[in-house]
Image (cartoon, rainbow, N blue to C red; front, side, top):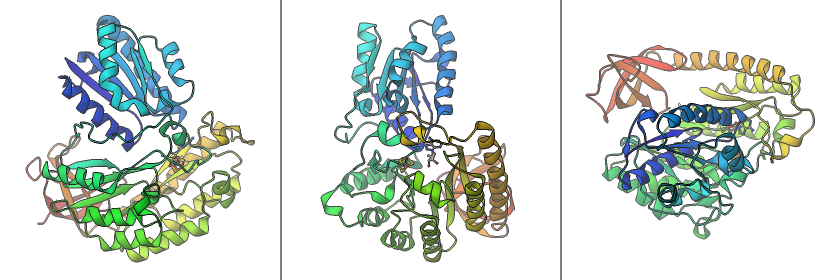
Length: 441
Ligand code: 5AD
Ligand code: SF4
């Protein structure tokens, strides 16, 4: 029996997919790359923007054809999309060939739900509203033994006015620090060298745990994880500018394993728009946080998320975003066209921005940021950087690849041989997406 899991969306979903794969392997299924060969195909979906759902329906269309050739194939749809109000019904209507639909809160019930589909040969839908307790110790099949994702909080309490995540992932719940450190220790014992701590807002980690009150929750967790022997690198995402306080900045500066990279979504450079977005900070506060991080962590790389075309965004608001991008000089930015999500406040705001205007603005923003990314990468030319070697580059024959502590992709002559080692690379050339160099040590 073979399975194939397709993942849409963020790292949280990638991580959930590892758990789904782990559960399938516990049931005796083997992974296959080609969905046409699979007995069970699971689509772990995203609903953060309309385009993410469009892609899911596209794949479901392709699978319909495969299933007509192999009627025994079981198709499951899970994750954030079914969790959105009304969407589970939509999936069943638009894609009746789907056998199993389950939400983010039903992940740990997957083996039982799958058994129901197999044994009773009927479609099963399980989407609960309750986030329930955090289930520890679910099996996982890490996609990569060298690097792993570790969830520290589930859900989100921020309710940014455009965002559907709090509605589909539920209230923020922190895992206990001992459970997290225990997981990291087990990963390291199995050969892992780098962990990325995941949460929608890592900076509010622990606020729901009694012993971590006082805002020192995430800072304390970073220090605990920094102490795990055999681990080399610690990353974390996503950070929230409102909650990125001095204790966390100090912990990032003090902890040798914590990498010099902060993903700090700004979303907009206009105070009026930030207010409408319910982000809880001003551009002045954002600039202060950036200055404090750069002061405490020399050489830190800064990346961000930006939404263009939020309801009410004028040309002047948008220009303030461009000004902020020019001033802060992010190493990279993920840019998004605002997508109204039904059930969120912003979907009902007046002054929705026409699609042509959104398209024009995002093109201007991308052009500006790509130039800055190239220039910032150029600064690494002639420098020596530490790279964790991931092995042969899948897309570049004769080259090996890895990442710097600042999370930049580096290509250098080689193959699989130094996988899992830390090497020093002298950077000779830089593009927008990669650095090129040679191993010197
Ligand atoms: N439309 C466009 N972008 C969105 N994001 C979240 N919700 C929306 C939406 N409705 C973006 C934000 C967030 C990133 C993960 O996705 O920039 O930081
Ligand atoms: Fe969405 Fe805001 Fe929570 Fe991020 S912090 S998941 S953008 S509500």
